[in-house]
Image (cartoon, rainbow, N blue to C red; front, side, top):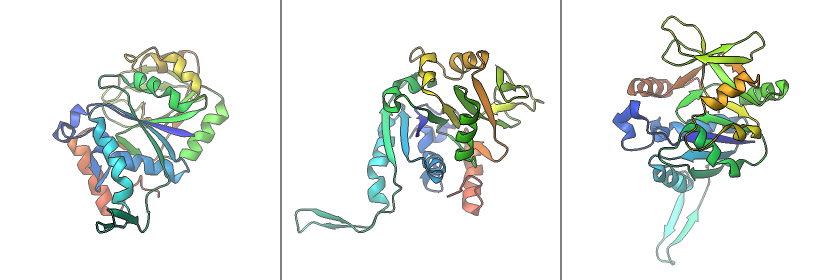
Length: 257
């Protein structure tokens, strides 16, 4: 199963760093948050990634192009036709497809643009700015158990996000704005989707969280996987500092590898 990661946005809320690089490339512990997300999937056996790039996408491509070299011991012998010898390779066994999905494309449009790399099989989808200690195997097992077209991970957090209305069977009924005192659950990504999902996306202007997910909810095809552990997005410098402190303390909840 492939994991698709949305990494093409501008990251305007953390503009102190995102003017230099895409938000998914902002580092936590000297590694991009994108790497942390991929390590979570990799821990559960997901090694095939499709990255939806956009803003400053060349920086993402350059980082992966150099990743193998940066994580290996290498001898450069300039006396022998610039011969390069790799002594060890500690890079992960990943297959990473980096796709330029456009500068101003909406989230749904980005997913639609990578359809040819997914094929006609279920796939995983998440955002490139949030880490969690979510059990990917259990998430996939839950998705397979209910037989619906889509599963999104839901999390209870007292912040500024839209709320999911979830019934007693974990079916998502609708979306609404969050109130200050609301204890409702939010969409944190970490989704499992059937290939039918591409039929719900019209074009580049489609916001995935709007018409596609709302239509799936109306049709009774959208289920919630309630994540009760840790989740944190990196939306601001304050969020980044919080994640950095966790990582440096040696007690980063999302580090399961």
